[in-house]
Image (cartoon, rainbow over the protein chains, first blue to last red):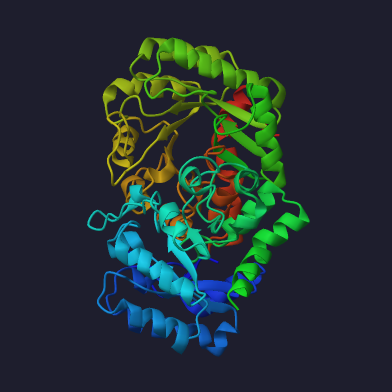
Length: 255
Length: 261
């Protein structure tokens, strides 16, 4: 549920060629991967970014594994057209947002409007809370994590929104959980989740229905997410929810 | 054999060292980690007094009491208290079961005041693990960088030094220690950013790269993936996962009449 295509702006990654990434994900047993594009972080021609993302995901070499999640930047003029194209032209199932790279807070009016319009279109909204540990950012591009505190209030006005936070959790306690633990329409991926046994502890905090498998590949070694499940020794039913059940449920609610 | 060079008793459930150690070993067993190097106690201090570091070392000794077959201890000391640190080295390493020294963020290791501790560790054949970071948002005043460690390595060429976290900003950290052949890169404690292990192996050689996790604050899993998921040859993975750390610990273990197990 947390994969990116194209190039990370600050270094080449071992799996940043899509065929190699697809091969690796397949080796790990991944059947479907929700993908955004690294280009979306800094490129202003978001329409072109989304078109390339769609094209790459549709390529036969992707073998139907890659599910594109286009980007909408509500700080750009006429961003509503990007949302429309994601939905109507590319038939995407959701949008991926980068509020910190695009320079807006979650209490900004355009974000509330974007949440409403995306929900009206039955799109899942993924919000990338971070992309990289801020301690290792390039000195010229330091981007603070997204402040998630305003999100519960925004969601009160859009109770049917389906929101998934990417890279929002460092540990199974505190942080984003203290803000969003009770917001039932919000789910979390495990890519940046740490602590030994962290996935099992997270599930104790928020229930297995709100935790999804996410690797943040190819920026992270994709093996990490798979090993986290093994470390937490989840029961079969719980593991199925995390690996695919919750994601399928989110998709089907929008179908 | 997989040997984790960087583990702690913090961030793990349990109210005693023994309980926490049992949980750590349980998690380690689930993903195939055979041996752990443990340092620092249940509650940490950035600038520990001698009383505090002795207490933390006592907690590690407690943990080793029942888990000495699965873990090796490193003694935690402070360059602010050299005399007391040397005494602690004698207590825990010379006269006790510990096999390494842990230096954290009390004082930067580029300063020569640290040298007596490193010299004593080297006399005892103990490895020296120095935490290092290069933080874009600013280091703590006493927090060493890989550059500091490189200076120490030049002053103490006989010492076996481990560059904790490879500086966090590992693209700079690897370069900083590249020319210091007595410095080894610890992969632990940062996110599992793809390419870290490949770069370290390419620039330092697989013999100078060590798997570590920084568990329990970090997941064993995320850190192990840095090696298992890396695009390096199988023989390099074996070195990084355990053979290198076993080689570094071999002299002191032999002196103590012990083996890696």
